Length: 126
Image (cartoon, rainbow, N blue to C red; front, side, top):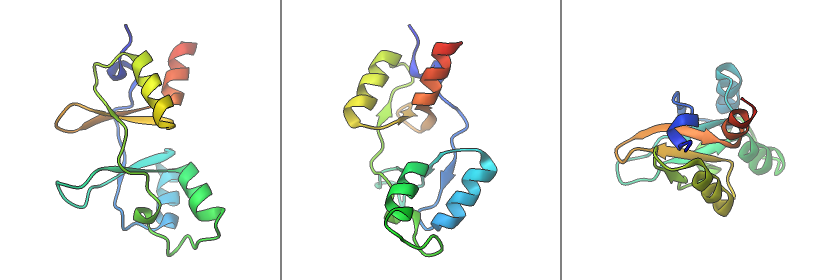
């Protein structure tokens, strides 16, 4: 059975909540990613995520300023987290129930990857 750890992207990219949307877009382009995990403020805080879709729907569509809007103002939080050993069909079900396109893979101590619809589709093609 294919598991989350088999399809996840291991090189997870992070950004601070205080980063501006303009800085975030530049980093997305340079690093070739469509989302960042948003760092926690402290150990008791939850991780968040900011995606290109968040930027389009929560910043561009509403006319907010890219130079002044901060990531922490538009993030989705908390993240959907799945175990590395979870079967892919269950990952898909959870993503569907949560209405998200990405799930963070968490081993109980740290984030070890991220899995997206794109990762799953690419695996089906191969």
